[in-house]
Image (cartoon, rainbow over all chains, first blue to last red):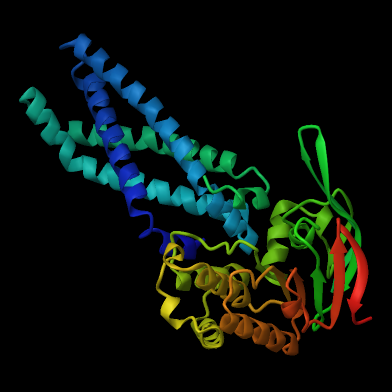
Length: 169
Length: 227
Protein backbone atom coordinates (compact mmCIF):
# COMPACT_ATOMS: atom_id res chain seq x y z
CA UNK A 1 0.00 0.00 0.00
CA UNK A 2 2.79 2.41 0.91
CA UNK A 3 4.54 1.66 -2.37
CA UNK A 4 1.39 2.29 -4.35
CA UNK A 5 1.01 5.63 -2.54
CA UNK A 6 4.64 6.56 -3.07
CA UNK A 7 4.59 5.76 -6.77
CA UNK A 8 1.12 6.96 -7.47
CA UNK A 9 1.25 10.51 -6.11
CA UNK A 10 3.16 11.84 -9.09
CA UNK A 11 1.09 10.04 -11.70
CA UNK A 12 -2.26 11.10 -13.16
CA UNK A 13 -1.31 14.66 -12.25
CA UNK A 14 -4.15 16.21 -14.22
CA UNK A 15 -6.76 14.00 -12.56
CA UNK A 16 -5.51 14.78 -9.07
CA UNK A 17 -5.04 18.49 -9.85
CA UNK A 18 -8.68 18.61 -10.89
CA UNK A 19 -9.78 17.03 -7.63
CA UNK A 20 -7.56 19.39 -5.64
CA UNK A 21 -9.33 22.33 -7.32
CA UNK A 22 -12.78 20.82 -6.76
CA UNK A 23 -11.99 20.27 -3.08
CA UNK A 24 -10.53 23.75 -2.70
CA UNK A 25 -13.67 25.33 -4.17
CA UNK A 26 -15.91 23.17 -1.97
CA UNK A 27 -13.95 24.11 1.14
CA UNK A 28 -14.02 27.83 0.30
CA UNK A 29 -17.77 27.62 -0.27
CA UNK A 30 -18.21 25.81 3.02
CA UNK A 31 -16.08 28.40 4.83
CA UNK A 32 -18.30 31.15 3.42
CA UNK A 33 -21.41 29.21 4.39
CA UNK A 34 -20.08 28.78 7.95
CA UNK A 35 -19.08 32.44 8.12
CA UNK A 36 -22.57 33.60 7.17
CA UNK A 37 -24.24 31.08 9.45
CA UNK A 38 -22.19 31.93 12.54
CA UNK A 39 -21.24 35.56 12.16
CA UNK A 40 -23.37 37.26 9.54
CA UNK A 41 -26.77 35.59 9.81
CA UNK A 42 -28.51 38.66 11.25
CA UNK A 43 -27.23 40.98 8.49
CA UNK A 44 -28.63 39.57 5.29
CA UNK A 45 -30.44 36.27 5.39
CA UNK A 46 -31.07 36.31 1.63
CA UNK A 47 -27.35 36.26 0.84
CA UNK A 48 -26.88 33.57 3.48
CA UNK A 49 -29.59 31.46 1.86
CA UNK A 50 -27.99 31.99 -1.56
CA UNK A 51 -24.67 30.70 -0.25
CA UNK A 52 -26.38 27.74 1.42
CA UNK A 53 -28.13 26.74 -1.80
CA UNK A 54 -25.06 27.15 -3.99
CA UNK A 55 -22.92 25.26 -1.48
CA UNK A 56 -25.26 22.28 -1.20
CA UNK A 57 -25.77 21.99 -4.96
CA UNK A 58 -21.99 22.14 -5.46
CA UNK A 59 -21.55 19.47 -2.80
CA UNK A 60 -23.99 17.16 -4.59
CA UNK A 61 -22.15 17.73 -7.87
CA UNK A 62 -18.81 17.01 -6.17
CA UNK A 63 -20.04 13.73 -4.67
CA UNK A 64 -21.41 12.66 -8.07
CA UNK A 65 -18.17 13.58 -9.91
CA UNK A 66 -16.19 11.71 -7.27
CA UNK A 67 -18.36 8.62 -7.59
CA UNK A 68 -18.18 8.41 -11.38
CA UNK A 69 -14.48 9.35 -11.60
CA UNK A 70 -13.55 6.46 -9.36
CA UNK A 71 -14.88 4.09 -12.02
CA UNK A 72 -11.85 4.97 -14.14
CA UNK A 73 -9.73 3.14 -11.55
CA UNK A 74 -11.59 -0.16 -12.10
CA UNK A 75 -8.97 -1.57 -14.48
CA UNK A 76 -6.17 -0.55 -12.13
CA UNK A 77 -7.96 -2.11 -9.15
CA UNK A 78 -8.46 -5.38 -11.05
CA UNK A 79 -4.82 -5.31 -12.11
CA UNK A 80 -3.60 -4.80 -8.55
CA UNK A 81 -5.83 -7.58 -7.27
CA UNK A 82 -4.49 -10.03 -9.86
CA UNK A 83 -1.02 -9.20 -8.52
CA UNK A 84 -2.26 -10.24 -5.08
CA UNK A 85 -2.90 -6.84 -3.52
CA UNK A 86 -5.85 -7.19 -1.14
CA UNK A 87 -8.97 -5.17 -1.82
CA UNK A 88 -8.82 -3.26 1.50
CA UNK A 89 -5.19 -2.37 0.82
CA UNK A 90 -5.76 -0.63 -2.48
CA UNK A 91 -9.01 1.00 -1.32
CA UNK A 92 -7.14 2.39 1.69
CA UNK A 93 -4.34 3.67 -0.57
CA UNK A 94 -6.82 5.48 -2.83
CA UNK A 95 -8.66 6.96 0.18
CA UNK A 96 -5.38 8.30 1.55
CA UNK A 97 -4.73 9.80 -1.90
CA UNK A 98 -8.02 11.66 -1.98
CA UNK A 99 -7.77 12.71 1.68
CA UNK A 100 -4.32 14.17 1.02
CA UNK A 101 -5.75 16.22 -1.84
CA UNK A 102 -8.58 17.37 0.38
CA UNK A 103 -6.08 18.31 3.14
CA UNK A 104 -4.02 20.22 0.59
CA UNK A 105 -7.21 22.02 -0.49
CA UNK A 106 -7.95 22.86 3.15
CA UNK A 107 -4.44 24.25 3.66
CA UNK A 108 -4.75 26.41 0.54
CA UNK A 109 -8.14 27.68 1.70
CA UNK A 110 -6.54 29.12 4.88
CA UNK A 111 -4.97 32.19 3.22
CA UNK A 112 -7.55 32.50 0.41
CA UNK A 113 -10.70 32.62 2.57
CA UNK A 114 -9.92 35.82 4.60
CA UNK A 115 -8.92 37.59 1.37
CA UNK A 116 -12.21 36.52 -0.19
CA UNK A 117 -14.18 37.84 2.81
CA UNK A 118 -12.26 41.13 2.84
CA UNK A 119 -12.81 41.53 -0.90
CA UNK A 120 -16.53 40.74 -0.87
CA UNK A 121 -17.62 42.42 2.40
CA UNK A 122 -14.87 44.96 3.03
CA UNK A 123 -14.55 43.55 6.56
CA UNK A 124 -11.54 41.98 8.23
CA UNK A 125 -12.14 38.80 10.21
CA UNK A 126 -10.47 38.51 13.59
CA UNK A 127 -8.30 35.55 14.51
CA UNK A 128 -10.84 33.74 16.68
CA UNK A 129 -13.52 33.94 13.96
CA UNK A 130 -11.12 32.56 11.38
CA UNK A 131 -9.99 29.77 13.66
CA UNK A 132 -13.60 28.80 14.40
CA UNK A 133 -14.51 28.66 10.71
CA UNK A 134 -11.45 26.60 9.79
CA UNK A 135 -11.87 24.14 12.63
CA UNK A 136 -15.57 23.69 11.83
CA UNK A 137 -14.86 23.12 8.12
CA UNK A 138 -12.16 20.61 9.02
CA UNK A 139 -14.46 18.74 11.42
CA UNK A 140 -17.48 18.66 9.10
CA UNK A 141 -15.94 17.93 5.72
CA UNK A 142 -13.42 15.24 6.71
CA UNK A 143 -16.02 12.49 7.42
CA UNK A 144 -17.91 13.45 4.27
CA UNK A 145 -14.87 13.01 2.01
CA UNK A 146 -13.90 9.83 3.82
CA UNK A 147 -17.36 8.29 3.46
CA UNK A 148 -18.07 9.32 -0.13
CA UNK A 149 -14.63 8.34 -1.50
CA UNK A 150 -14.64 5.12 0.53
CA UNK A 151 -18.08 4.16 -0.74
CA UNK A 152 -17.18 4.99 -4.36
CA UNK A 153 -14.09 2.74 -4.30
CA UNK A 154 -15.91 -0.01 -2.41
CA UNK A 155 -18.76 0.06 -4.93
CA UNK A 156 -16.57 0.06 -8.04
CA UNK A 157 -14.35 -2.75 -6.75
CA UNK A 158 -17.19 -5.14 -5.88
CA UNK A 159 -16.88 -7.00 -9.20
CA UNK A 160 -14.72 -10.04 -9.79
CA UNK A 161 -11.06 -8.93 -10.37
CA UNK A 162 -10.99 -10.68 -13.75
CA UNK A 163 -13.97 -8.60 -14.90
CA UNK A 164 -12.44 -5.40 -13.53
CA UNK A 165 -9.30 -6.21 -15.47
CA UNK A 166 -11.37 -6.32 -18.64
CA UNK A 167 -12.90 -2.94 -17.76
CA UNK A 168 -10.97 -0.39 -19.81
CA UNK A 169 -13.50 2.42 -19.34
CA UNK B 1 1.58 -28.69 -5.81
CA UNK B 2 -1.44 -27.57 -7.84
CA UNK B 3 -4.22 -30.14 -8.18
CA UNK B 4 -7.09 -29.41 -10.56
CA UNK B 5 -9.89 -31.87 -10.14
CA UNK B 6 -12.88 -32.17 -12.51
CA UNK B 7 -12.97 -28.42 -13.14
CA UNK B 8 -16.07 -26.90 -14.74
CA UNK B 9 -16.25 -23.19 -15.54
CA UNK B 10 -19.22 -21.55 -17.16
CA UNK B 11 -20.12 -17.99 -18.04
CA UNK B 12 -23.71 -16.82 -17.86
CA UNK B 13 -25.00 -13.90 -19.84
CA UNK B 14 -28.73 -13.43 -19.38
CA UNK B 15 -30.28 -16.79 -20.14
CA UNK B 16 -27.40 -18.13 -22.25
CA UNK B 17 -24.72 -20.27 -20.63
CA UNK B 18 -21.29 -20.73 -22.19
CA UNK B 19 -19.32 -23.74 -20.97
CA UNK B 20 -15.65 -22.74 -20.89
CA UNK B 21 -14.21 -25.79 -19.11
CA UNK B 22 -15.82 -29.20 -18.77
CA UNK B 23 -14.19 -31.61 -16.35
CA UNK B 24 -10.52 -30.68 -16.64
CA UNK B 25 -8.21 -32.55 -14.24
CA UNK B 26 -4.49 -31.86 -14.01
CA UNK B 27 -1.61 -31.94 -11.50
CA UNK B 28 1.25 -29.45 -11.66
CA UNK B 29 4.31 -29.86 -9.46
CA UNK B 30 7.25 -27.52 -8.98
CA UNK B 31 9.73 -28.22 -11.78
CA UNK B 32 7.00 -29.38 -14.20
CA UNK B 33 6.61 -27.74 -17.59
CA UNK B 34 3.14 -28.43 -18.91
CA UNK B 35 1.64 -26.95 -22.05
CA UNK B 36 -1.99 -26.96 -23.10
CA UNK B 37 -2.53 -26.30 -26.76
CA UNK B 38 -5.78 -25.68 -28.50
CA UNK B 39 -7.63 -23.30 -30.77
CA UNK B 40 -9.13 -19.97 -29.68
CA UNK B 41 -12.18 -20.43 -27.48
CA UNK B 42 -11.11 -23.83 -26.19
CA UNK B 43 -11.02 -22.60 -22.57
CA UNK B 44 -7.27 -22.00 -22.21
CA UNK B 45 -7.51 -18.53 -20.65
CA UNK B 46 -10.36 -19.64 -18.38
CA UNK B 47 -8.15 -22.40 -17.02
CA UNK B 48 -5.38 -19.94 -16.10
CA UNK B 49 -7.92 -17.53 -14.55
CA UNK B 50 -9.56 -20.33 -12.54
CA UNK B 51 -6.26 -21.75 -11.25
CA UNK B 52 -5.18 -18.42 -9.80
CA UNK B 53 -8.63 -17.72 -8.38
CA UNK B 54 -9.73 -14.97 -10.75
CA UNK B 55 -12.71 -16.93 -12.01
CA UNK B 56 -14.95 -18.99 -9.78
CA UNK B 57 -15.47 -22.59 -10.94
CA UNK B 58 -18.99 -23.88 -11.30
CA UNK B 59 -17.93 -27.38 -10.25
CA UNK B 60 -14.73 -29.17 -9.24
CA UNK B 61 -11.81 -28.25 -7.03
CA UNK B 62 -8.47 -26.49 -7.30
CA UNK B 63 -5.89 -27.05 -4.59
CA UNK B 64 -2.73 -24.99 -4.30
CA UNK B 65 -0.76 -26.67 -1.53
CA UNK B 66 -3.12 -26.54 1.47
CA UNK B 67 -5.44 -23.91 -0.07
CA UNK B 68 -8.66 -24.97 -1.76
CA UNK B 69 -8.99 -22.03 -4.13
CA UNK B 70 -12.72 -22.43 -4.79
CA UNK B 71 -13.58 -22.46 -1.08
CA UNK B 72 -11.57 -19.54 0.26
CA UNK B 73 -12.43 -15.84 0.49
CA UNK B 74 -11.52 -13.21 -2.10
CA UNK B 75 -8.86 -11.76 0.21
CA UNK B 76 -7.35 -15.22 0.76
CA UNK B 77 -7.28 -15.88 -3.00
CA UNK B 78 -5.41 -12.61 -3.47
CA UNK B 79 -2.98 -13.77 -0.80
CA UNK B 80 -2.44 -17.12 -2.59
CA UNK B 81 -1.79 -15.28 -5.87
CA UNK B 82 0.76 -13.07 -4.17
CA UNK B 83 2.61 -16.04 -2.70
CA UNK B 84 2.46 -18.68 -5.44
CA UNK B 85 1.74 -17.32 -8.92
CA UNK B 86 3.52 -15.33 -11.58
CA UNK B 87 0.77 -14.81 -14.14
CA UNK B 88 1.34 -13.66 -17.72
CA UNK B 89 -1.90 -12.55 -19.33
CA UNK B 90 -2.80 -12.76 -22.99
CA UNK B 91 -3.36 -9.01 -23.19
CA UNK B 92 -0.20 -7.65 -21.55
CA UNK B 93 -1.82 -6.08 -18.51
CA UNK B 94 0.44 -3.34 -17.20
CA UNK B 95 -0.61 -0.44 -15.01
CA UNK B 96 -0.94 2.38 -17.52
CA UNK B 97 0.12 5.32 -15.34
CA UNK B 98 3.36 3.75 -14.15
CA UNK B 99 6.62 3.18 -16.00
CA UNK B 100 7.81 -0.34 -16.80
CA UNK B 101 10.27 -0.17 -13.88
CA UNK B 102 7.51 0.92 -11.49
CA UNK B 103 5.25 -1.86 -12.76
CA UNK B 104 7.99 -4.37 -12.00
CA UNK B 105 8.57 -2.79 -8.61
CA UNK B 106 4.88 -3.04 -7.65
CA UNK B 107 4.74 -6.63 -8.82
CA UNK B 108 7.76 -7.48 -6.67
CA UNK B 109 6.40 -5.69 -3.61
CA UNK B 110 2.93 -7.21 -3.92
CA UNK B 111 4.39 -10.69 -3.56
CA UNK B 112 7.28 -10.05 -1.18
CA UNK B 113 5.53 -7.51 1.02
CA UNK B 114 8.56 -5.30 1.50
CA UNK B 115 11.20 -3.66 -0.58
CA UNK B 116 14.54 -5.42 -0.32
CA UNK B 117 16.57 -3.33 -2.69
CA UNK B 118 19.32 -5.92 -3.24
CA UNK B 119 17.13 -8.89 -4.16
CA UNK B 120 14.86 -6.79 -6.37
CA UNK B 121 17.79 -5.28 -8.19
CA UNK B 122 19.42 -8.70 -8.76
CA UNK B 123 16.23 -10.14 -10.21
CA UNK B 124 15.63 -6.99 -12.27
CA UNK B 125 19.15 -7.11 -13.72
CA UNK B 126 18.72 -10.79 -14.59
CA UNK B 127 15.43 -10.25 -16.44
CA UNK B 128 16.56 -7.03 -18.10
CA UNK B 129 19.59 -8.78 -19.54
CA UNK B 130 17.64 -11.87 -20.62
CA UNK B 131 14.82 -9.92 -22.29
CA UNK B 132 16.85 -6.94 -23.42
CA UNK B 133 14.58 -4.56 -21.53
CA UNK B 134 17.00 -1.86 -20.46
CA UNK B 135 15.85 0.84 -22.94
CA UNK B 136 12.22 0.26 -21.96
CA UNK B 137 12.49 0.56 -18.18
CA UNK B 138 11.63 4.23 -17.86
CA UNK B 139 8.96 4.27 -20.52
CA UNK B 140 5.21 4.15 -20.00
CA UNK B 141 3.14 1.26 -21.41
CA UNK B 142 1.48 3.50 -24.03
CA UNK B 143 4.94 4.30 -25.46
CA UNK B 144 5.69 0.63 -26.18
CA UNK B 145 4.95 -1.52 -29.20
CA UNK B 146 2.94 -4.74 -28.87
CA UNK B 147 6.04 -6.94 -28.64
CA UNK B 148 7.79 -4.64 -26.15
CA UNK B 149 4.64 -4.55 -24.03
CA UNK B 150 4.50 -8.34 -24.08
CA UNK B 151 8.12 -8.60 -22.94
CA UNK B 152 7.51 -6.06 -20.16
CA UNK B 153 4.45 -8.06 -19.04
CA UNK B 154 6.52 -11.26 -18.97
CA UNK B 155 9.18 -9.50 -16.90
CA UNK B 156 6.53 -8.13 -14.53
CA UNK B 157 5.26 -11.65 -13.89
CA UNK B 158 8.65 -13.34 -13.61
CA UNK B 159 10.23 -10.73 -11.35
CA UNK B 160 8.10 -12.10 -8.52
CA UNK B 161 10.19 -15.28 -8.58
CA UNK B 162 7.35 -17.44 -7.20
CA UNK B 163 6.78 -21.20 -7.37
CA UNK B 164 4.44 -21.32 -10.38
CA UNK B 165 4.38 -19.51 -13.71
CA UNK B 166 1.00 -19.38 -15.45
CA UNK B 167 1.41 -18.12 -18.99
CA UNK B 168 -1.49 -17.33 -21.29
CA UNK B 169 -0.33 -16.95 -24.94
CA UNK B 170 2.92 -15.24 -23.94
CA UNK B 171 4.37 -15.26 -27.47
CA UNK B 172 1.46 -13.56 -29.26
CA UNK B 173 3.16 -10.31 -30.33
CA UNK B 174 6.82 -11.29 -30.17
CA UNK B 175 9.33 -11.00 -33.00
CA UNK B 176 11.55 -14.09 -33.66
CA UNK B 177 14.45 -12.79 -31.52
CA UNK B 178 12.22 -11.97 -28.54
CA UNK B 179 10.43 -15.29 -29.01
CA UNK B 180 13.75 -17.11 -28.54
CA UNK B 181 14.58 -15.00 -25.47
CA UNK B 182 11.25 -15.92 -23.86
CA UNK B 183 11.57 -19.58 -24.82
CA UNK B 184 15.02 -19.78 -23.21
CA UNK B 185 13.89 -17.86 -20.16
CA UNK B 186 11.08 -20.34 -19.54
CA UNK B 187 13.54 -23.22 -19.78
CA UNK B 188 15.88 -21.50 -17.32
CA UNK B 189 13.01 -20.92 -14.91
CA UNK B 190 11.99 -24.56 -15.16
CA UNK B 191 15.56 -25.61 -14.39
CA UNK B 192 15.41 -23.40 -11.30
CA UNK B 193 12.46 -25.52 -10.12
CA UNK B 194 9.48 -23.40 -11.16
CA UNK B 195 6.31 -25.17 -12.20
CA UNK B 196 5.13 -23.82 -15.55
CA UNK B 197 1.63 -24.06 -16.99
CA UNK B 198 1.65 -22.66 -20.50
CA UNK B 199 -1.48 -22.29 -22.59
CA UNK B 200 -0.96 -21.43 -26.21
CA UNK B 201 -1.86 -22.28 -29.76
CA UNK B 202 1.79 -21.85 -30.76
CA UNK B 203 3.35 -25.33 -31.01
CA UNK B 204 6.85 -23.82 -31.44
CA UNK B 205 6.71 -22.48 -27.88
CA UNK B 206 4.88 -25.48 -26.44
CA UNK B 207 7.50 -27.83 -27.91
CA UNK B 208 9.88 -27.31 -24.95
CA UNK B 209 7.30 -28.50 -22.42
CA UNK B 210 7.79 -31.94 -20.86
CA UNK B 211 4.08 -32.65 -21.19
CA UNK B 212 1.73 -31.31 -23.84
CA UNK B 213 -2.03 -31.76 -23.67
CA UNK B 214 -4.58 -30.83 -26.27
CA UNK B 215 -7.55 -28.79 -25.07
CA UNK B 216 -10.70 -28.60 -27.18
CA UNK B 217 -14.12 -27.25 -26.26
CA UNK B 218 -13.17 -27.08 -22.59
CA UNK B 219 -11.96 -30.69 -22.36
CA UNK B 220 -8.53 -32.28 -22.42
CA UNK B 221 -8.85 -34.43 -25.53
CA UNK B 222 -5.38 -35.86 -25.86
CA UNK B 223 -1.81 -36.19 -24.65
CA UNK B 224 0.56 -35.00 -27.39
CA UNK B 225 3.84 -35.39 -25.50
CA UNK B 226 5.06 -36.87 -22.21
CA UNK B 227 3.22 -39.26 -19.94
